[in-house]
Every structure is written in structure tokens, then in C-alpha cells.
Image (tube, rainbow, N blue to C red):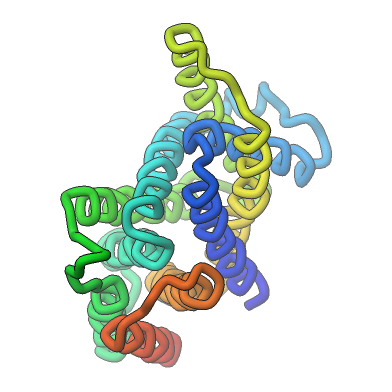
Length: 289
């Protein structure tokens, strides 16, 4: 249970960091690249030794980890844009509505059993996240293309990441290897980011700022923990992905919405609060199943 709580905490901290990046007008890509560099350093510290390059190159999961790294930096950038255009609450909800993809994958790929209570809980969860994200079109808040487009991309991107992570945990990874796997995932994302920044520097003379470095570190410290603790939960006996992903994701939605309301003063309507209430109900239904 402690791993699940830590996964929820670190994921919520990511959305807070994204909000601060948008609020302080920090270069998003620079912060994300620093973030992934920090994640690699954290992974090396957890490994306690320099990551064995020969072992990584000979592993059967190398290409999968590199593919995930490409997805990571893409979805992270889209999440940052969602926070910028739609706020913390919507970004969190879009990211966690993706739970339907790994849950459905669990049914077809791993023959996980689905009780009526679990199915009902998943349906309630889907309704809950839509209600929690809803905003009326007002003079101060106009729905535009970006408001819907970026969250939709985050939904599908995050869902594919979760499902693919579970597939690797189930089929290619030994428990002792998952930290090396994370180092490779984050390292790939960092290399892609640095390459883009170097090209931008050559063409535009873009330089790093202290704000980018500081906010990147603020983002990177919890980011490593989100994947580390999630995989740790999935490795626990009896914790199925069709239960872990809904409970983890909806709990993050509730926590992020409350932080958005209390800390950043994002206004939540009665419909939003109903969505949060249904989220709690969905968690209970899925856990009881």
C-alpha cells in the first residue's frame, strides 16, 4: 500500500510542477530535458553503481525501453501544454482518464477477471473524470481548439504508456531489472530532448536559464518516483493492473483537483465536485471488487 500512496503523491507533485512552469513562464522543453536528466541521475543513485552498459545493450527489453522513452517526452510535453491551456485539474484528469486503455488491455492480454462491481466502478470512473474536467464557456474561460485537443492526445498517449509499461513488466522484465529499464527509458527521453535543444541552439541561439534548470529539477525529482513506485505496485502479489491503474489514476485526479482548488485557486463547479465525489466512489467499488 505504501508504494501506491507514494505513486499518488509523486504524480500529484508533477502536476504542481507543471503549473509552476506555466505560471512562471519557464521554457517548457528546457525544463523537461533537465527533468529527464535528473531522472537518470536518480536511477543511477538507486542502482548504487554505474549502470552496466553491456548488460543493458544485451537485454531483450532495450528497444521497448527506447520506444517508451520517445513516448515519455512526447506525452510530457503535451501534458505541459494541457496545464498551460486548461489548468492542473484538466491535465490531471486527461492523463488519468487513460486508465481505460491498460484496464481493457489487462482483460485481453492477461485474462484478468472482471466482476460486475469492477466493471461498474470503471464506468463510474470514466463518468467521474469527464464531470471533474467540465468547465462552462464563460467570458473569462473560452473553450478553444487547444482546450480539447491537447487533453485528448494526453489521454491516448498516457494510456499507451501505462499499457506498454505493464506489458514489459509482465513479459520482458525481471524484478531486479526494472530500475535499469527505467534508466534506459528516461535516458532515451533525455537524449532526444538534448538533441532537439542543441538543434534549436544552433539555429536560434537559444540559451538555458536558471529558471529552466530549477523548475526542471523540481519536475524530475518526483517524476522518477512515479514510474518506480508504479512498477513496484504492479510487482506486488495479488495486485492486478485492472485494479491498480483505476485506483492509482482516480486518486491522483482527486488529489490534483484539490491542490488546484486550494493552492492555485482554480475554481471547481458543483459538477466538478460531483465528479470528484464519483471518483472516490469508483475507487471504493474497484477495490471492493
